[in-house]
Structure formats: C-alpha cells, structure tokens
Image (cartoon, rainbow, N blue to C red; front, side, top):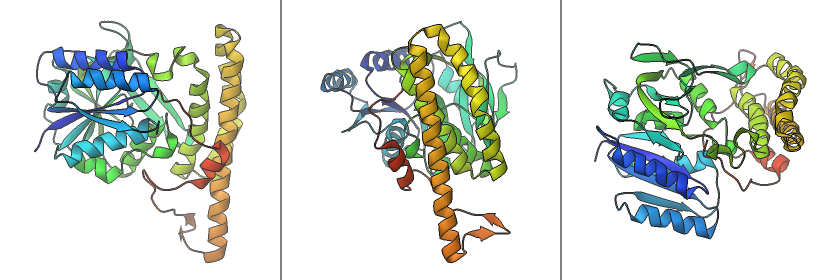
Length: 345
C-alpha cells in the first residue's frame, strides 16, 4: 500500500472531531487516502460518541487509548498505525480543523517527501490569518509566529511549523523518532522541528494550501485563558531547553526573563478577572517545575561524568539522542504523575 494517511488525535471533543471529519469528507479536490483517529480516554460517554461518529465512516481506522496519554503519544500511536498499514506519508492534523477546497492537492504538489510541509492557517473562513510562518529561537525557547498574509510565492522556507497541520513522509518521521512524549502537550512540535533542523530536514510552508483552525478547543474551556495551558506551556519551555542542551549562559538568560514574562502575562491575565490569578499561579508553578527538571537532569549528567568521564567531545557535553520513549524520571518526580487533560492544540 502507498499514499497518505491523515491522523487525528481526539480528547473530549467529539463534536469538534465530527466537524473536522465532515469537512474533510466534503471538500473538493484530491483527499488523503485514509484516516486514522486516536481517541485519548476522557469519559465513557465521549468515547461512545467518538465510536459512533467513526462507525458512520467505515473507512476510518479508530485507535482507542485506555487513558489520556497526551497529544504527542496519541499522535505517535496514530502515525505508527498508518505506517504499519503501509502508507508512505502521514498528515498530522488537529481535530479542530476545517479544510478548504484543493488544500491537499496544493500541499502535496511537487513534493518529493524529503521536506516537512505545512499549510497556512486561518482563524476562520476568509477571516484573519492564524499562522503563515514562524521563526524558532532554540537558545531562548521562543517561537515568533507570523499572522501576516502569506506571500505570493508557492513556498516559504522556515525552521519551525505548528503541529496543528503537518505533512511528513514515513522515512523523515522515522529519522526524527516521532514526538517526545514527556511534553504531554505543547512544545512537542517545536522540539520536533528543532531536531529536524539539526538533521538538515527542510521545513516549508505551502502558501497555496489553506486550512481553518477553530481555536479555543485546543485549551479547553476559556481558550487562551485556560489555566492548565499555562502550566504546561511554562514547564515545557524548560524541558525544551534541557533537550536542546543549551549552555549555562543561555539558561541564565532564560532565568532572567522569568520576571518580565510574568509581568507581561499578569497584565494580560487581568482581562479575565479572578481567573487571571489562576493563570499566573499555573505559569509560575510550571516554571518552577520546568527549572527543576532542567537542573535535576544536569545534576544527574554531572554525576555520571564525574564517575566515568565519558560523554564529552572537545570539552562539550554530548548526550545520547532521546526521542519518544526515553525515560525521564526527574519529570515524574517533579510532576507527581500525568495530567488528566489534553488540548487539541
């Protein structure tokens, strides 16, 4: 078998998933060859709703996870299923997307499978742009996203793309090792793009392929104001830095930026009233957890280096590559277990 399989990860939003599947069914032009839906367990009632809407589409390959394992883990399971079935390429898709005519045909035009591709993304049909390009700064753990209208050129080169919608070939996916599952939600796509850049894998934005991002569903009730979003976003910034193996200088630069970032967030959080205090609290809690992860990892590495004096090259620390399944016990100690919520991005 060959072709492209679209992979959706769902958690707790069957009606949003139904909208995405309906949109995929009814757009004009070429469509993906198959659909895989991975359902992270939320409630028994939601699970039955997901089962029912997928049974209405017999061609869908439905994968049930018996607990909520997070976006990255869910997507890894879905991509594995698609590749095991023999598909050459996969589409990584949010379950709160809608699709425009000919989006898939434009996305795959003149594609040789060696690059990662993303469509441009609108907030709503004919509405404001949500994402048209971006720049990742690994040392600062920041990503500058552009919502400017896309240029007239067919493609834009970049060093990052959002996990909201990505096209990748099986060989490239395997070379990168999938998403690092300890992120649970947020930053796993940026970490994946960082690894792609290190391996020289091009990332392209296809300016003639458009999808629509519903927004809000990705963070649960309240959209950007969902407090849990800020815990994971803050924590995973430091997990990203730890995996990027940044120098002590850049760690200190990021520590110095905690205060101005907190002040800026506090100003935004005031707009949502009492909920703002919870937002700031979760941001600070996530920051503390993330710094603990980074420092704990580096202490463990230094202990290992002292005992064996191995893992160095030219005076620079060299760590084994860690992809999706490498244990990170420090994270488990700091967090005290997994979260029970997952954004749809």
